[in-house]
Every structure is written in structure tokens, then in C-alpha cells.
Length: 135
Image 1: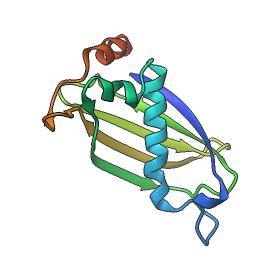
Image 2 (image 1 turned 60 degrees about the vertical axis):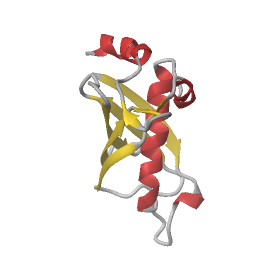
Image 3 (image 1 turned 135 degrees about the horizontal axis):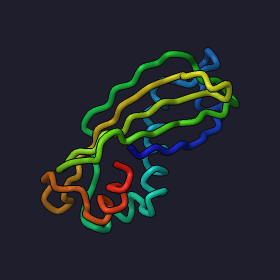
Image 4 (image 1 turned 60 degrees about the horizontal axis):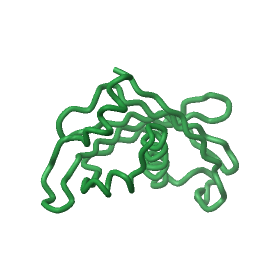
């Protein structure tokens, strides 16, 4: 299992009239955490794109348990529960506030796709080599 944690400070522009984080921003939190999880493996999305691979989101699930508020420091825990096989990678996210209360859970599925053909493909071998030791 591969697990990372990313901290994000909630700034005023992320909140709505009720003073809580607008629900649409959670997908961005997941994306920030996914990018950082890949970066901790020694790669960036830009590196993967330079291999001719893009990673579109094909499925997203989100559950809201408690609100995040202005100036909270949230921690996005990102987990790969299984070694990605074939063309699909699934990121599981849990968002906690600084009191360690679970605020939100999410699951995001992406496909590995050849940019030139827009057809699904295998995960890049270099990325797989970095991940295999966690499973």
C-alpha cells in the first residue's frame, strides 16, 4: 500500500457564504494530493506527459462528513490500496482537519492514455518500478 499526506491551508477564496469550503473545491484538493503523491515517487505529471501518457479522470466519488473552514490546515491522506494494473489507477483520499477529525472521503479513478492515439495503455514501466515495492 502506498500512502502519502499533503497539507493545504484553507484560504478565504475557497469558502462560501456560510464560511465553509465550497464543495466543488474538494476535487482540487484531491488533485493537489495526487500530484504530490506522484512527486514523492520522483515523478511529476509533466514527466509522465513527456512519456506520451496523459491521465484523465474517469470517475470521482466524494462524501462530505464535516465542513472545512477558513484558515483550517487540512491534511489530505492519499492511498493506493492496490498496485495499479493495466490502464487504471485508483486514488483513495481522506481529508482531516488539524483536530484529526475526518472531514471528507473521496475516490478518484484515472486511466493511463496514450496522448497521440487517445487509447488506454499500461502504466509507464518507470512509475510501476517505483510503486511495486509498496505492495
